[in-house]
Image (cartoon, rainbow, N blue to C red; front, side, top):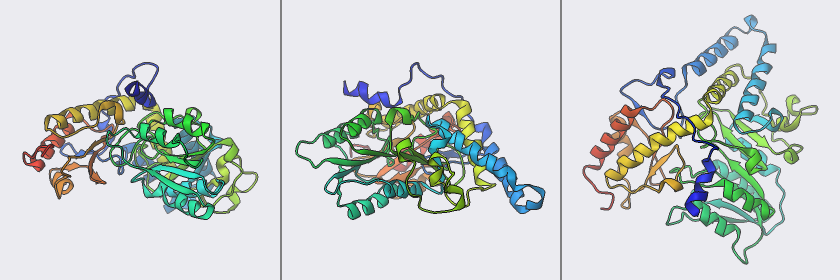
Length: 391
């Protein structure tokens, strides 16, 4: 029963057709295996072109009327909203996910003595603003430890329903653990949070663009994601979804653009919004993802990580069960720890990945092909030097 439920997070009405490899749309050399989309992605050619056009606008502003830029702002906003099942009026444009989380924390009031729930080893952008809120409001921060069986969802459900625990006030969650792709099933967790009467804040950094995300299904108070990872856009730009009942709060920065008559979540828009470079780049990346269809992207990435998982298992490395890992990130945690210098050694072989909290994190995106997987497996085998995962 648990395995069946755990797969619902990324379930679709019918199996999606897998997206073909899109390497031709990127400038990734044939000899480079870049499996680090969870860190940041290379830019597609169309996104680079949008940025270059924007630079020309800023370089020669007398040739380009500034009045055209707000249309790009709204185009990016609408594209971001579309990927999460929201309307444009529900989405603010901010500078980073940390900015978005500060806005969320700034607009959540809670009774002292309640719990603020999150997982252990959470990313700082989702911790710091809420640590400050907890200190100011007298909340008890509860971090759920990494479960020995890898089932974060079951561990979080148990924490929410723990007998005798203080009331749950806020849950700050993600659809998967950022360090290794371990699944955190919000289809099961969101209803439990709502039933407890708590606010739900979601950092969807490692989800939007790679797997289906639906705010109508999860009903978060706030949800945020940046553009520089899975949505193939620029650095320094993010989007904040605010539920309708959270759209009349206080912005962190006050400017003419987010005062009345600003509509909906635009109340939280950042200053200097009309960026002729970043907004067209973001729109191009978001629209590219939408054109492929997120289910098709997720199907491709699931196929890639499944093949990697099979290869790692053949090297006697422990891999989480398929039902407990997201489709687009594969984490490897040998019992004895990763060899020193593993990531650097892979890089010398033109294989790019990350080490996060003791895990080797492999995160392919749509440019990755079977040659990349083979090169990655060969480089890991060579780096391990015949060492067994059970050693």
